[in-house]
Amino acid sequence: MKILSFNEHNTSASDAGVICMANDADPRAVSLEGVKRIDLHFPKFTDGRAYSQAFLLRRRLGFQGEIRATGDVLIDQLVSMSRTGFDVAVLRDGLDASAAQRQFERFPAFYQGSAIDTKPLFAKTVA
Image (cartoon, rainbow, N blue to C red; front, side, top):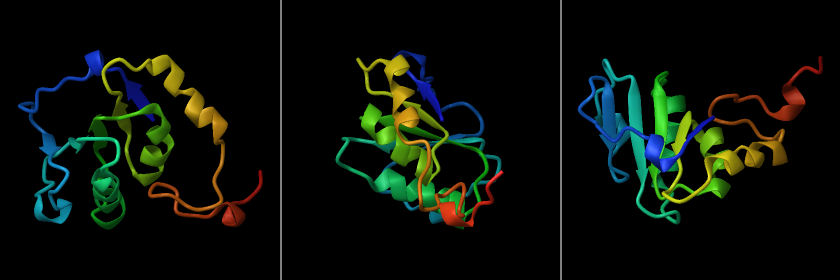
């Protein structure tokens, strides 16, 4: 997962191929033709509707473009975001992006499958 600081995020949704989706929007009702990036918004860290949107976009709708988490994104949410289909996370203003990568080092593997890799750990071959 790519992690951006608040200042690195381009908030211009006028770019061709970029959709900013409200957290109460149904991804199934949006045309994904020509879309390269979808920004899903977390209005506050306790509102997890964007997790469901990302999962729907990846698993049910087969969206292959970039899914970006924006809004009140905290470091402790990053692993869950990655597992539900997000590619990029824009951290809330004031958080250190360099500290965020440690979250992924703390959890190197999961027993369950994810939105990206659906096989559970026991079903993967040991190399």
